[in-house]
Length: 255
Ligand SMILES: C[S@@+](CC[C@H](N)C(=O)[O-])C[C@H]1O[C@@H](n2cnc3c(N)ncnc32)[C@H](O)[C@@H]1O
Image 1 (tube, helix red, strand yellow):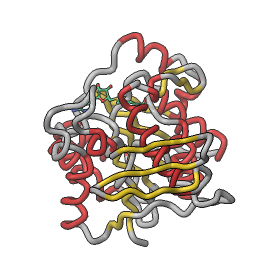
Image 2: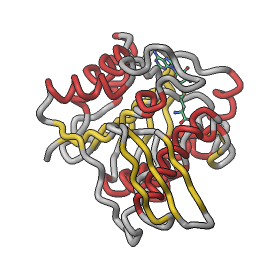
Image 3: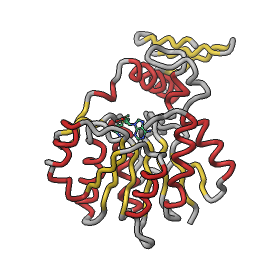
Image 4: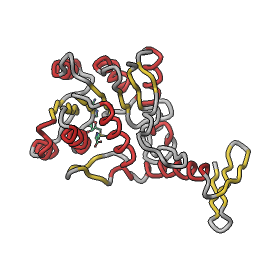
């Protein structure tokens, strides 16, 4: 694909699959093409590795964080289960939203919670809404421990952000999806891996070995879930696309 932006002529020429289309540079099509490249090139530049939330590094695109906040506020979950803690910023982000809502706990699972991260998370004011579980998210003892923390009446949301290999995501989906309450959702993160396959900072097998492949296989087996982007609660844009690392990531459990 070739995208040619001419700011003097005010055109955006998009050439792909042997055809060329010329758009006004201020058109929705031009913005969508640039946004798509911004997400992909930003992946290579590790753009999402430059932010903190309430003092802890969070490895998320800010646009995705806002969409997650919108989903949490819409669902008002009692429990968010997140696989993949790293520095703890995402746990603290979800916990702080729950603090503002006035209810809820976050269960964070990681195969290795490094001592300096654990110390910082445990010292954080939001720790009162966080439970840390160390172990592989798909190990039977981890799954059992987490399931024991979820009461039968709890409204549960699930966020998968650990190992994004197809088989691991598939196993996480099977291990935890039934805990997700009707009307709530699963966010399977980093489907962008499929879109950036072949670029620097990617794996050779990412075209197939990625969360999207796992999600599609899961949906074929689980008609109780549907893939859909949450309707934006506020949208006065001119039809802008989401700049996201989580395409094919939002699985809503049908009411
Ligand atoms: C992308 S980071 C998580 C980022 C974090 N959610 C955030 O937004 O800041 C991925 C984490 O998954 C963890 N991880 C890798 N394999 C895992 C597994 N099998 N079970 C649980 N956690 C795993 C890694 O240790 C790492 O901390």
